[in-house]
Image 1 (cartoon, one colour):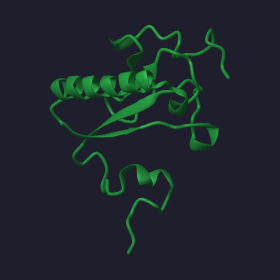
Image 2: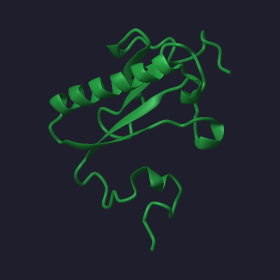
Image 3: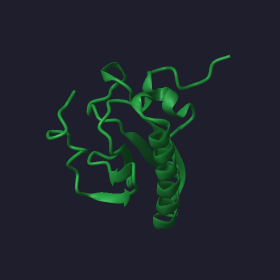
Image 4: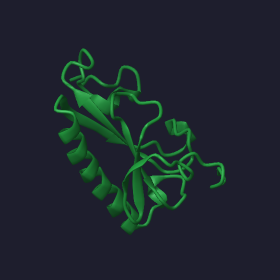
Length: 127
């Protein structure tokens, strides 16, 4: 596990939402404009290691982010929300974080399947 002294999240100073157990920052490598990250203050690797109180704080932050982003940008018409848990899922920073990715009509040709598209060919539903 990355030490807290070296963790980019534990040392981030660009917080735009700050609560007792979690905070939010804008992603430094955004997928879309205003892509945000919810980060628990306690340094743990994945969402599954959080206490119930920390999980509730993260969900509360999610609601705050949604409200603020919709006020900030009227073109947002949807969101992708998720997290990677472990290296094999694609997690690169080993401090739990939840992605809040604003979506806009027409930002990709066919959004059907949403996060299912993480595995090529699995996003479209087949009968």
